[in-house]
Length: 199
Image 1 (cartoon, helix red, strand yellow):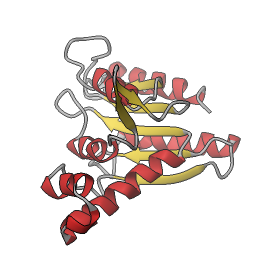
Image 2: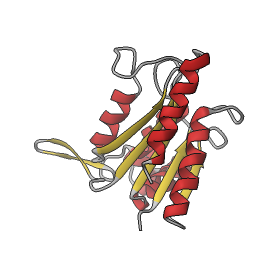
Image 3: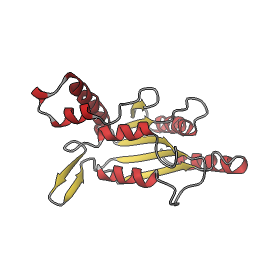
Image 4: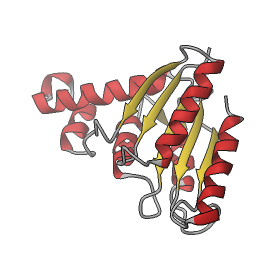
């Protein structure tokens, strides 16, 4: 059994390509692995706050010194990290906004990249603590960016996932979605064909 946690981040409810890919993933995965999907967190419906002083205080202050706001921020961060810790497979649905990831997904990452929880500092540098997990990243892009210097999405996500110990990462890009005609149809079909092999 591989427990799956899904993170949605598209601001669009209707017409979202990354949500289409997520729906296909869920249908395929459940057909092959019933009951393995342990949660879907939608950052558009329930966004998490950006990194702030309350979250830092919740992490760094002794329990007796935390304010009510810092305690609340820590509880939220614990909930998010617990979801990641419980999963064997992490699925990130990440449309490209302005060459990078949605700010809601960045805020979520700021909650779950936590020293002593998902990584630790050692004498030889940081060490990820989530080894043995797998990540699947489903992207939707208006243009064609794979391998180009304008792609600040895949390199960043690979780096932060590796930082917490997740090195088995598969990207499925739906590229050219705003180019129209054959470009968008081909890009979506290629992504769906790749996704069909995942489950």
